[in-house]
Amino acid sequence: MKFVLATKNQGKVKEMLALLGDLDIEMVLPSDVGVDLDVEETGETFAENALLKAKALCEATGLTSIGDDSGLCVDALNGAPGVYSARYGGEELDDAGRYRLLLSSMRGQTTRQAHFQCQIACAFPNGDVLTAEGRCEGAIAFAPMGTDGFGYDPVFLIPELGKTFAQISSEEKNKRSHRGKALVTFAQKVKAYLG
Ligand SMILES: O=c1[nH]c(=O)c2ncn([C@@H]3O[C@H](COP(=O)(O)OP(=O)(O)OP(=O)(O)O)[C@@H](O)[C@H]3O)c2[nH]1
Ligand SMILES: [Mg+2]
Image (cartoon, rainbow, N blue to C red; front, top):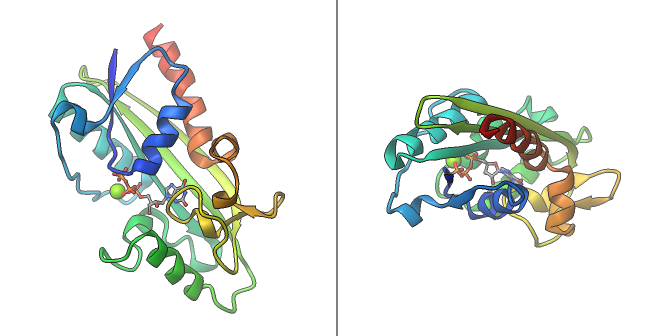
């Protein structure tokens, strides 16, 4: 069975391919099937946006589609940037611009607790939907550390390791990350669904 990954984020693609690699499914990207779609993320929750992306790609390709909506929720900022993580500071900022803005919003702040949230939604052409979620607790570092990963990884600190997501291997990140947890649950549900 062919699944399309309903994302334009190459960092997510790499992690999704690694984490779903044991499933007996073929995974392709929208570009592999000649589709280039910008899905408007108008939902107010990760769950709504993940489903919007999965359903839009399912409709456009006729294939089962897996959407991922995720973000960083910072306690001292009342959960921001949250569902707006990709748009934090405006469209013109890149990943580094966004995490630098986050660090400046946190200047002088001693409460550094934060978590990543990931919601997966899978839309089948027959209308069926499977969902899964994952969460990873951590803290906002005082300065960026490391070069691996993507997004806010250089400033997301795993306190028990004393390292950010950008300082550990992708295998290690996948073992403990929000996306890793969500996709392990999702893989079990897909196996059960496909029988
Ligand atoms: O450091 C990070 N490590 C992660 O593991 C991670 N997962 C998500 N994010 C950030 O949260 C936003 C998601 O927004 P998002 O779900 O709309 O995705 P996106 O717009 O990048 O791609 P798409 O899937 O929508 O096409 C983006 O800013 C991502 O950089 C992460 N940052
Ligand atoms: Mg997005």
